[in-house]
Amino acid sequence: MKPKNIYIALTFLMTLLVFESAHAQKSIPQRPIIQTSYTADPAPMVYKDTVFLYTSHDEDDAMGFKMKDWLLYSSTDMVNWTDHGAVASLDDFDWVPYDNGAWAVQCIERNGKFYLYCPMPGGVGIGVLVADSPYGPFKDPLGKPLVKNSNHDIDPTILIDDDGQAYMYWGNPKVYYVKLNEDMISYSGEINVEPTTPQNYQEGPWVWKRNDKYYMSYASTCCPEGIGYAMSDSPTGPWEYKGMIVESSEKTRGNHPGIIEFKGKSYVFGHSYDLLKQRTPKFYERRSVDLDVMKYNSDGTIKSLDYFSVAGPEQVGTLNPFQRVEAETMAWSEGVKTRFETEWEGDFDWDRGKKIADRWFLSDIHNGDYIQVKGVDLADGVKSVEVSVSPINGGTIEILADSKEGTLLASVEINDGRQEGLWKTITAPVSTPLTGIHDLYFVFKGEKDLFYFDWWKLN
Ligand code: FUB
Image (cartoon, rainbow, N blue to C red):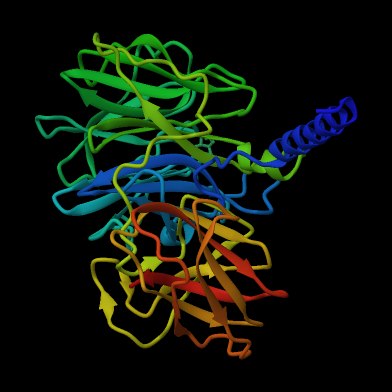
């Protein structure tokens, strides 16, 4: 090659590298796990084959704490999360005197009933709501706080021991605990203050048992807070500090653990300001739940993580697209929000605690917005796609495989009918015959205010 051509080739390569690295710097990590709302204080609960993730909810316009209700997300694969919206709120308690104070809850199942322990700060107390389904509706059986002990009544967590005895722990800056009765809405004996509040304890206890050892994790060190933990031979301590599950990091200020075991792996949930920081350099109290795989050492202690990894946990299983998939099920999204709509007609679905005609759907869909659904098993192939939408100005849904610029699986035209409120199912043929497992990207195109999107299905 002539020197001049070598020079041209090198210059081209350098330009390409600079462009690529600028592009790479612009792309944002696809974390945290929920993007359509700000979520905090994760309280995951495994029930049957599903993880139900209850969170507190920082409002989109929150400056300081602005928390009115509790949200629910669910997943069967730890990667794709379905938004179920608000399952309970301060309005569910007649005795709560304010409309801002829906702090960190935990939900636990016992004998087919679901108990949601809700702290209201400032000495108002810890209430309990009960439902027949993890989706609610949750009702207040007491009409008063379950515990009203001090100004420190926040962050309840529940352990049901192998002998059936249930304990509730809570508090900042000390750990309080009490024995709950089998009805889970009353307690016996004194409220105790843990004599040896574990080292580095701030708040947000989360207690569980594994191999006859009791574990208490909590928001640890301040500030910033990480997630530390202590162990004990008894549910009532003494607790011995063992270290950090997630190191404290400048990426967060507060923290709040939730820990589960699901399909043979352990997971630690916490929260950060990562989503807020992707959107603005300013600070507001708008947090986001994230999670990672948690690993034990052979002696029962827990391996420490520096932070929630960008890659996150591996998907457990795949997503079946040949049955209705809610559009508000996603691993990642940009731009969109979710919305609830109720209809007066329709039978009540007792499993879901809602009218059948009630729906959560994707809203605020604009040109270029998208959702990503991971690990979709197209099996031996797909012929057509169905979408349930309600057009506003209309537009297109492009369904692409493996990246936003990937292979076009189908393109669905949503007519401009100005038929807001009218839902219809549109079927479109598949343009490229793909088989096997792919991440699907639903990319929305059009002028403005395109449509609402309720569910999709492949045939
Ligand atoms: O979210 C409100 C409070 O902030 C929680 O109760 C604490 O755990 C901390 O996360």
